[in-house]
Image 1 (tube, rainbow over the protein chains, first blue to last red):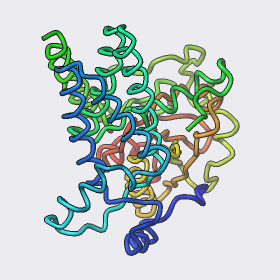
Image 2: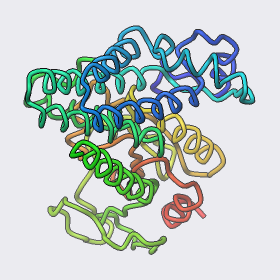
Image 3: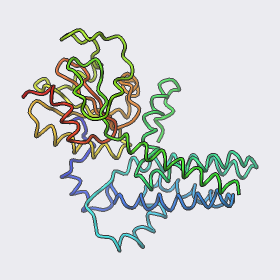
Image 4: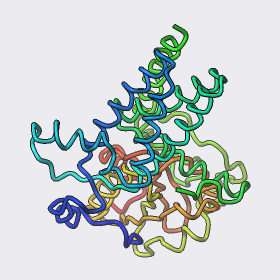
Length: 165
Length: 166
């Protein structure tokens, strides 16, 4: 009752008709999470930080421009979606953007670590991002979204940390 | 080499965490202060976690949910399912569909939704760590049970049955 922003199931069926709305095909982010997982494994194995920097740019596009502008999402629409049956299922964009923002934070810390010679820092930050991406890909579990409430609760003490997108 | 081991370890840990989270999803935790006896609905033997202040005096429970939550209870319903959500929560949509449908089809059961996105103080007062979390609150404002994750419809209904009109 108290959610004017939330579309009812009926409304979201209508939203599905206009693809550029505030929702996306949920299989797109899932596909992107698998690609992200593979990229982050490659970063850990090779320790080649420019690849992590590229992933940071992908995260940034997903977080600040929106998931539809992420390169992985474009890849999904061009290569994968045409081979799948269309779906009416839709997923809200807000949680996805938040999660991509969390990934961006870890990726930036990782790049700084690797590039400045603090390899351990780079490895740990990349491992956190990998764990989150893999949980999302394999279980559909959005770590960044779940952590939002925790961050926000901490922000009672630390003034508004978690309320930034 | 180290990197490859870290990658492998991370994936294994994440897989274990994912399986554990999936197993916990939708499990019902009975709040001990509830006046009616635990009906032993399933495997939730662990009881409650906190709120020591209440005494199980018959008919006069002590712990009530915060005023902000009591304000949204449906006065006509025996039990209100109070769903706690945030904007950044995809499963909240699924929970909303399950719960509103259950409330529509069940006498004495209502469903409402509180958005905790900008209300960390209320989330702390309710000791909620993740969304969706659903509280079942009776007409007196006493929390009967809570469910983390998307509730399983039949389990939830079975656990609520003793609190609903026959």
